[in-house]
Image (cartoon, rainbow, N blue to C red; front, side, top):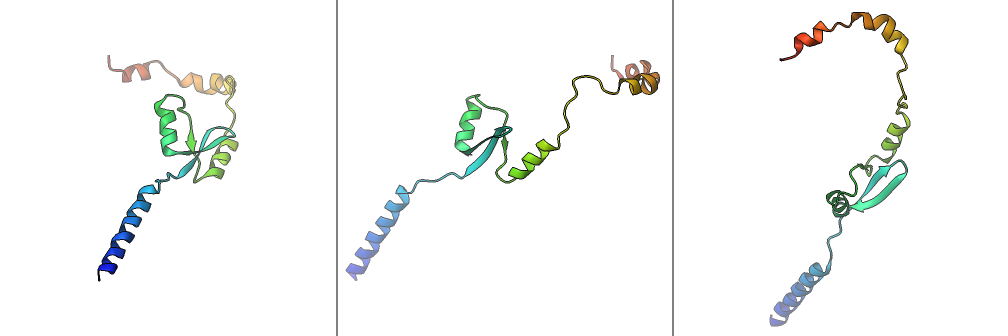
Length: 107
């Protein structure tokens, strides 16, 4: 009986010691900082970058790595200047009146 209790105590102590030695492992996330700039990071590493002010533009693409690429590929380019000026000057500009927006302002 005493041997069984002693064995149980020893096994319990070993289990507690093993649990104390095992380090909690954070899951890694795939973070994209820009086109083609990806890095595997833990949440605590990412929090450190954000709190330190080193990075503020990023996207977690762990669960949707292909979606992030397809969104970037389907984004139309931003024009450098007006592109439909003729349509605006000829057809749209004649309907714009100053009185309508001014009447909605709270003075």
